[in-house]
Amino acid sequence: MEQNWFSLRSVKGCVHTPLVNVVCLIAKGSYTEVQFKNSLGVLVTSTESGCLKAFEKILEFGFIKLRRNVIVNRGFVVKHGPGRIVVLSTGDHFTIPKEKWCEVKAQLNRQMIIPFYKKDDSLNEKDDS
Image (cartoon, rainbow, N blue to C red; front, top):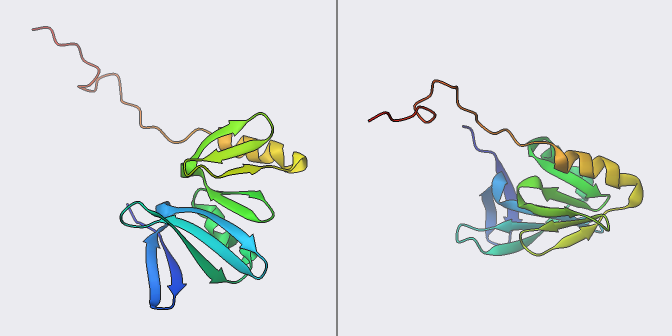
């Protein structure tokens, strides 16, 4: 399976992180704050030049735009519900605007693709010995 990468600029050069490690993107004026887990699993924040709109192509890869200034990786969402709140595994939580809640909730409720086994697979056969 092909892995997609996200490039982050820093003073020391460009850091490439797998897209699955990117937790969220938050607009901060004409900059975008990108939170991601590094190779040690530590949450790191990088400030990138460019507004959030410049990063919206990421929505094609399992990310959801919660509000006009926040995009999150669906893989890090652990809870959503009453009060229109979405909670991430990092502890961050975001309140969703009322007019966007139905769309966000529908995206979060979509089933992930789960592999099913055929009835004749060895995992489903009974051992008669």
